[in-house]
Image (cartoon, one colour):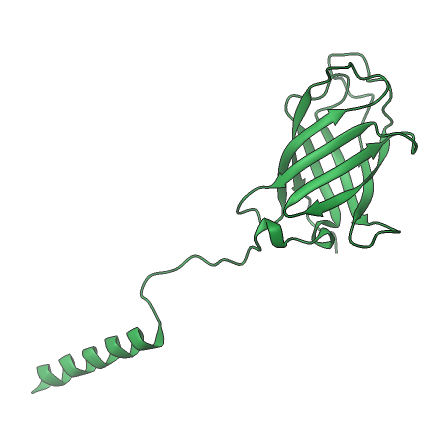
Length: 168
């Protein structure tokens, strides 16, 4: 009799779990929004930039600050800061400032920024995509030198943006 009660209890528990949708397997959490659902405001903050290989005459690392654009609230503005005196193995790039202005958008998971070292002309372009599974904390893409000192056939330079921890 005890074994039949035990079997009935186990059957009842298993049936209850089945009908309640509970599973014994751990399903991965999908807390990350899809790239297409990301909004520009989710990118506000500090980012580490790594170029591999670095652009000719510029350092391999930089820091980017993104914030809300003053005029276009759904867009991005900010700065990219580089140590131009850092040893790069090449002459410093003409047409680039240590701190350059940024403006652009995040559309359907694509990050598009224009860079200006003189606040008049576009001296670089950034095009990147959110890295899948990064929850918007990493983007990869290419940067292109469009400054007056850039060669006509300036290459696209691969970059990675990684969100820096927010300070309290």
